[in-house]
Amino acid sequence: MSRPDDKALPDITLAELQRLVASEHNCHGWNASAKTLMLGVVEEVGELAKAMLVHHTDDYCISYGKTRADYDDAPHEMGDIIVYLMGLCNKLGIEPTFHLKVLDEQTG
Image 1 (cartoon, rainbow, N blue to C red):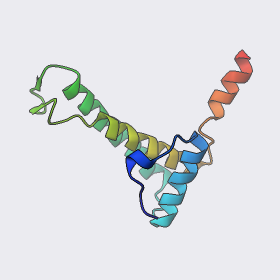
Image 2 (cartoon, rainbow, N blue to C red):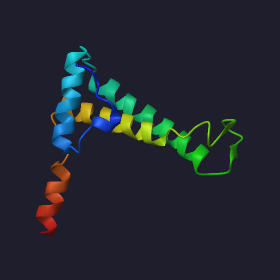
Image 3 (cartoon, one colour):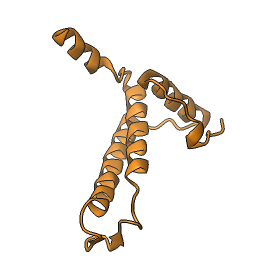
Image 4 (cartoon, rainbow, N blue to C red):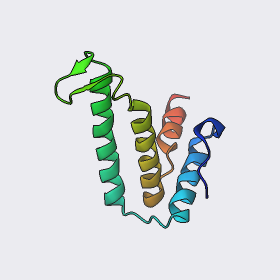
């Protein structure tokens, strides 16, 4: 399965995204464990934190030695987190909108 250009991706629901992630994982033979997927989430959250610290603080971040122009990867890292989370939902049999439905029922 070839990956479409980012601009070609239509608006999709969480359920559709979950199916797309499952399809990509199956297509590439990636059968990661829940533990591996969770570690991937944690790793990507760390990368997002790094991107946010660099991009949303001073023009120069001493800790990482990069300027804003060098490291504006927050959107990419957020996308990685979402893909790992959808993979984890697939592995654990969790519907990603379950909690939202419960909240809606409680407040509605």
